[in-house]
Length: 565
Image (cartoon, rainbow, N blue to C red; front, side):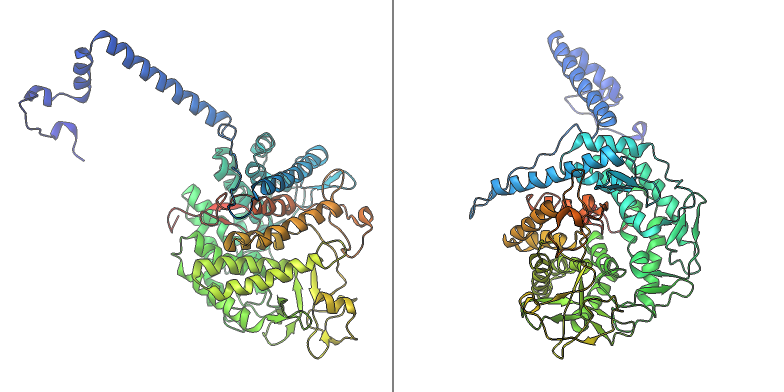
């Protein structure tokens, strides 16, 4: 750009050469003196008004950024069926549940990791960072609970994330998805710089986990000492479900090292030997990077590794093709080797597990695996894979029936299936995943349900089925999914609600109510379960799937503006 003194102008008849070479200040002064007195007064008033408005807006954003423009959700107009009032009533019921849970936490556990909603006490099982508070921030904001949000932010602003309770070994993965993810999401919603500052602090204190021979992270960090806790192995979900959060941190801070460090883990695992294309045993040897032990599962310890392949591809605005390729390889192999159907209910499909060699099958469907239909639905749209949407519908049906066909309407941790030769897993013993045995004759209930239960019959307020139901409604527009979600919410209200919050339930086949409460309310109930329910009954463009990617703890991240941070 040329400086002003070097620019030559041609004179015109309307304006002499001297005026053309005046500085902009001189030209403005000349125009001012040519104005009459009334025009000067009116002009001055306009400038003063604009200046006062600008200063006021700056003060509002600095001192109360999230109260200045409250979000209001318009009722959705449904031309075919007047569901606007129903949606609003249900959304408000979910919001009331969030208020109830938050008030119990605020009264008995504020600043602690978890509320114990039966004994009205608290615990710091995550090291004392106040994980429930951080995990719940964006849900509070999303539900327009701005006073509660402000109170939470004030607390977070004074936390010291470089310290944890004495001797505590902070779980790297859990704190990335809950604390780092929660702070990043809450920042993007409110633009409160204190939250971004604290997100960077959390990201920094957890970075020593990557200080390993291969760059594959150790599973725990001593944040007070600033170093990781050495370990021989880490599960693939823990190593491969931190990339989205560190990528977002790079985008927001402009520091590429966060993303680059986390991305190296994906590159290494992408090139590693596998028993079958696209399928990864859960245990990784940190020193060598080899994966040769543990089951192959889309459930616990494997689940979100596959989820993040797709979500990072979407987050990159479909430009990071490595993630697309890896996702499609995994889903194609899953469909080939891991999907089965109930012998009693032909509409009931499920995803079981494989052993580390991908040769033995376990006919168990985990509640954790019920995120898969939502993932398939997202992928069907993003990657033009229509067959995946059909499988997603079938799997969502099974996940809903895991609730619908129990005495309480709550789902156990998993259900089990028998094969055509009457082989299956024990219903009473916690055998290994692949210790199949000859089962006795099927009961009438098993024949009606299509599955039978194992020894673990607890419901710990998990969100995965509701996550898929919300996504399936937004992708298909089928109102049936709203009814399924509402039915699950009513069961949660009936069986798990305590005077102070909501409690995990020991046995979903028992109708003993409070006697089955286990005095635990995980932070993901506020972060995920209630959030997905709220979004199910909100307009589809409210936190649209076209504009946001949800991390595995349901923290919405705006899809990045550019493919690289």
